[in-house]
Image (tube, rainbow, N blue to C red; front, side, top):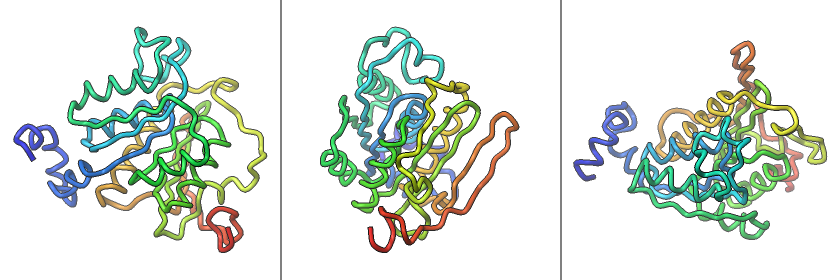
Length: 248
């Protein structure tokens, strides 16, 4: 590491169990971030600031005025720009040493699986159930760790899946893929809620990549921000799961 890097990441290096080795593991890592909205904004910023080496950003959308209430990586001047361009500029400005790959399109099944295969960790910051289920299936198929988050109204959740654990995948949690899903556009969301959930997603991704602490795998973390209450529920692997079960 250079002297500038030692100074930039000095607060990480001071952490017991992290040290220079953990920082170097981050620098050698590649994260795939799908979705650059309310959840993806803090994820991208914290991963960039923390010193991840390569970040692939995926989002087909452009910045809209209604996004700016919660999608803090974008600015008013970015309205009309592709979110991957706006976010890419923001994370490069935060950490010039970061390699950014921007994919401004919806990935078909084959391309999604390939992008997932190339990553060391996938962060699902999308906003709809079909996309989450597709990302989960690609991660299980390629044995790539997944950090999935969701938020609506004053509620949020985070789930971590890793191939070497006994915890359930996202499909174990949502066994009926046809179930109707609410969206923030329909029901609203309080801005800091997505910031809290996205920050936890970034934390879990860093833990998986660096080997620090104990990941959230096998548990579902739930936030009720109206009462500021947290719950952690065990989520074991479902043997009958069509994605990660005994006979997928």
